[in-house]
Amino acid sequence: MQLILDLLDQPLIRTLFETHPNHLGTSSFELPEEWSSWWDWAGSSSAETPSVDSDRDSQKCEAPWIRLLRHSSRSGQSSVAGQDIPLDLRSLIEDANRRVIPRNIGQTLPHVEHQPYSNSARSVSDPATCPQHSSGMSPKKSHEVVEMSSFIRHFLLSTKHSSTIDMKHVVDIGAGQAYLSRALRDQLGLHVLALDWSDVQTRGAARKDAAKTGSRSKRAGTGNAQRSHPLEETEHSEVVSVAGSLTYVTTTIDQASLLSSTSTWISGSEATDSENSNNGHPPPVTDAPATPSPTPVLFVALHACGSLTPDILRAFVAARKACALTAPWTPQGAVVVGCCYNMLRPEDFPLSRAFRSCRNAAGFALTANHLQLAAQVPSQWLRSEESRREATLALRKIVWRALLEDPLREQVENEHVRSGDDDGDAVKRASGVSDAGGRARTEEQADRRPRRLGRLRDSAYADWETFVGIVRAKLGNERLDIPRGDAVLERGIEVFHTLRCLAGPVVESLILLDRLAWMQEELEELPFDAKLVNLFDQASGSGRNVAIVITPSKDARA
Image (cartoon, rainbow, N blue to C red; front, side, top):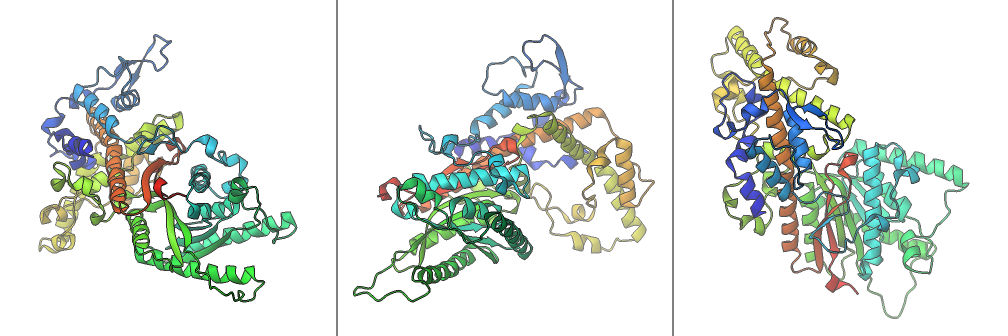
């Protein structure tokens, strides 16, 4: 974390995060001193670079922003390519690459020589082999559900702790349409509580489940056939006939509601299990009343937004520290994939004592720009022709919106003049807002900020004339002057934004390392270990591919 903080504290990096692309499109923009060494290069029309095919001697021209991405992908390799890129930018890219955590599928942190999670350990590796997973899902979601359910199976089988071997109860937090919940029930025979805050999502998940169950029953001829539990069948020679179950609950989700919802669900499950095991009759009376051990529960979350990830981890620690032998349940593990850093509460970074002990940590804060850029995955922009087209379109949107900044400001000024709004009312209405860098605007800046253009369809960016026509129509001003500007500025903005996005994974690494260190600190007095595991392939579109995994420590295993 110290190395990341040092990098983010460098003047060039700071200006990238402090500056919004729209500011570059204004006539009043002044070039920061830290950019003088590379701005002219950024505005160049192209750069001569050897073809990607090293067997060909031909040269091809590529835009500077693409040159940066290619250099990033070759960082650490011996290559003459990219030598024309200014030294400041090459150093920035190489330093950033050295500080990001590994993102290849299956890798873990802390690193172990023998990776505990590999393709050979998965029971399911191809969505095509599990058509029930793919129904209604995008390829990205299908990939995530298949890989995460496979990892959970591996988790339950490989951990030697007795309570984990017996673990049959899972809480899927932020379940959404419950694709993962159904996979855990149907493929692993687990009892699952699917929690989500949205009643629309919960009802939709229940409808999908009902339709799927009806179809399956028709094919099987009966809806009550039992099958062997896949985990026990693999681990033991004795086959235990048991089916999973799925319970849907809509609730606000935080630490308290997660714990209370789980307790309510487990209490209901125990009562049902007791009746079923005795054909609906009360359990027999014995000479020595048995003291049942707490039901072990696994917490899972596939993309827990914003502060939901810290809330889940807090709930795990709180339940473990309050654990008593008479408790109806106890968390025995967790697999949590976070996302949506822009929704993170300010108090949820930093979390660890390790971060706070770093040099210059006291003066560091994540701004809105940091959190937005942490979700960028520039390593995948040139993965294919399609991804390159998508990246080109995304950059065009950034650049053309920046070129609108002055015309939009002029529109706002004209509206104020026409309305005679000089009594400060607009200032009062706009006060208290912050700019994209997280700094408070002055009242005058807030009063004169351009109106939000809103989202435009992709076809609006087909060419400049089409774009301008749609913008004028949306603003209701057909005579608004919107000059194209010069190509040098456009290429400069492309390079600027690409550099910001290349620095984004460093921010995400800092957030993840802080969470890992925090969990390791919280679990010091508990028999558990914490690690980061890359569950998904980012090439599938799963940018947020890192799970925080809590497992029983080796010392606690039987």
